[in-house]
Length: 430
Ligand code: AMP
Ligand code: GLY
Image (tube, rainbow, N blue to C red; front, side):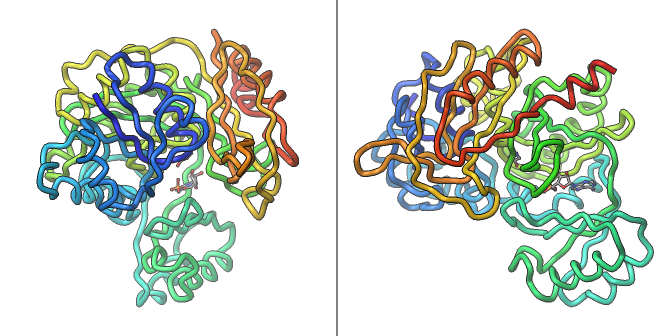
């Protein structure tokens, strides 16, 4: 197959790495890609929302399969656009329709979908710009802390957890009336705060059948001990030891099955990955959010654990034949450590030359925010720069492998958390 993959992060480098290993892959293009994908595929200078450019490229290069990494083109309707082009009606695409992508593009839509389909989630109410007074009155009656979510995409920043009523009221006004997150907060979901431990479950679906991929736990905060600002993700591990078979069975029965059946029943075309952010509250799963794509850096810890052919999996998702695909998983543990530019997630300097060693065996170095300068030297060009995945027989070994490579990658002001996975090791030793 000739395959086009859209995106430029560590997630897409991991996809490209996995696709390139398959004997089913003929040519692999990545748009726009990064210096890591350039080593294993052909990068194409096309943006992920350049719909007409993508359509032209697919026709000109006899692309058989399109894989869409990030949410933005999905939420903007790329899949529907392509399928409406002459000659592309039958194009195999991994990524949901625009309506399916609304599960991530609108928190209110996704909460309504969960309610309609009996998927356990936190109690909530939604308020529009003109409903500030109702919203403030609702807040008075809730217990604290309380969660405020911008309805639309807000680059991972649209969720506020408010510890006091005062803070919640001010934030609700800022979001609804002062457009704190622009258009994204013209609707706000006010949600009950859930306590417990978070984890993510990834599901591949062709809209009817599903396969549950390895679960993962990510580390969202910039600081060690889960302190400081939220980031796109500073690390991930898979499997998640506290997600035992009994818990995962509840996730499948109470969440995965009703979600996939809901898509089918409601006529929402969905061929792609569904990322389910969960809270484990005393052994009971609740959905925090759906994303309509794989996670980053979770993908870098999940894909190395898939042993069955990855292109076959992608083809089965896009072609609607997932029920006959046999998913085989590795029992090994993956630990991913993200290296970032100093200062991230706030302002940071770019352009520092990077020294990259050979990755140790048992580790893979995925590029994210890297670029090449005019002389071809590798430099940091984004907040999250690398995701380094170590594999091992257990979490200790996987972490040791990842950190051994991380310590050899150097550039000015590089930063990474040294405590990825430590909370899990402590839980295990209790
Ligand atoms: P989201 O963008 O919906 O994933 O929210 C970002 C983060 O906010 C989540 O990963 C959780 O850590 C936290 N969060 C969101 N909703 C809730 C909730 N109802 N209760 C507790 N924490 C939450
Ligand atoms: N790591 C969280 C995400 O990809 O949304």
